[in-house]
Amino acid sequence: MKSLIRTRAAFFLAIALVLWGGPGHDARAASLIRDAEVENTIRAYATPLFETAGLNARDVQIYIINDRSINAFVAGGLNMFFNTGFLLKTRSASEIIGVIAHETGHLAGGHIARFSNQINTANKMAMVSTILGVLTAVATGRGDAGIAIARGGQGLAMGNILSYSRGQESSADQAALTLLDRTHQSPAGLYDFLHTMENQEFLTSTNQDPYVRTHPLTRDRLRVIEENLKASPYKDAHPPPEQEESHKRMVAKLFAFIEHPTTVLRKYGANDKSIATRYARAIAYYRVAALDKALPLIDELIAAEPNNPYFHELKGQMLFENGRIAASLAPNQEATRLAPDAPLIRLGLARTQLEMNEPNQTREAIRNLLLVTQGESDYAFAWDQLALAYGRNGQLGLAALAQAEAALRRGHKKDALSHAKRAEKRLDKTSSAWLRLLDIKRTASERDDNR
Image (cartoon, rainbow, N blue to C red; front, top):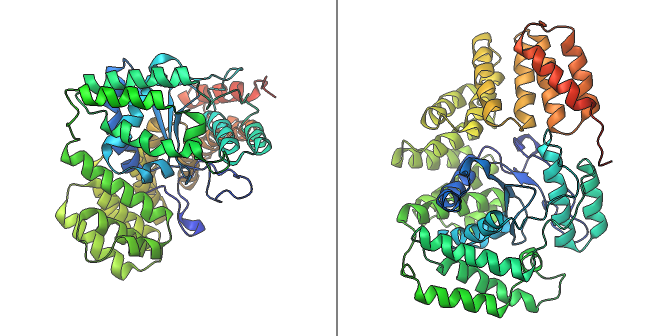
């Protein structure tokens, strides 16, 4: 997993931001995590629903939040958020699909509570930090913590981002039922998940999961879904085996990266020879640097599914993060060959090439990082790596420009201007890079009306 939380500082590859969650809240709360397999699994579940709802699936951004509490929501435009606590709580793909259908109902119905001021489109992370600030306030009951975090996200107005009325919830349920029916899927997953959450309503607010407070439940809502389930021609329809298998692997992977390795090895015992279990055990051993046990397991998985890019990706990551840089090149190349359109996987290859510190490999890293930044233009870490690659290749003007891009993505306008001024001294005024430099200077110089 290229971008999930690791046990050592060196393992932090793609954490977008980390936010404090207040007293009593898990220290890992309210952080974004990136992983190609997890994101693609959820997107595969979601795409038919998005398209049936009349949405362009590519326009909907999917975010995974590393937080133990159970929540899923939409906010700030076409942005859908899933807590790891929710994903790990689900027992089948159908529960995730049901909740995606419900959240898609909010998107299609225009229920999203929008910010009172215009979002700074040049800095999505500012928007995300504000949303996570509100999420922190909801999860902890600490409004001051949420406001402080939101102010750190360019001072965007918090508004009422995560709050939906019962009427909107009922409307989203109806939309979900229609979407599930039109895509020939059962409402059983949605009913099962909401039925599980129903008991949370009887807990005190401090003990409730945020889903209950942001998505008010009523017995009437559940009764409507139950009646629809009984009448649905697809009530007995189950997700295809490949979707259920992808769910098992996603849950195993998340659990293995988030929980303590001892807990992982206890839950996923050696006697279970399933792909998901061996996957989890390989990750657990890798996290404690036991490559003598991790590598044979991942090699077994590769032998079983040689065309699975995520297994090659994990092997490359294991080797890279344990200092075996040259050995990590081949599995990262194979992962990229198998998934050429996955920027996060290509980023792993570029990092290996860059770390090899050889002129030819550095040039290849630049080529790959340019593709990564095209596919993940808001990903500051990728711009950091591109800046490093350009610097090693002696292209100092482009290196400074890439640093300006990274700073802009983080909302650090003063730093972006500083890097842009350095780039200005070295770039050709007739180049496309010069035009981008002017765009960056203009954006970074704009007054932030939300402050």
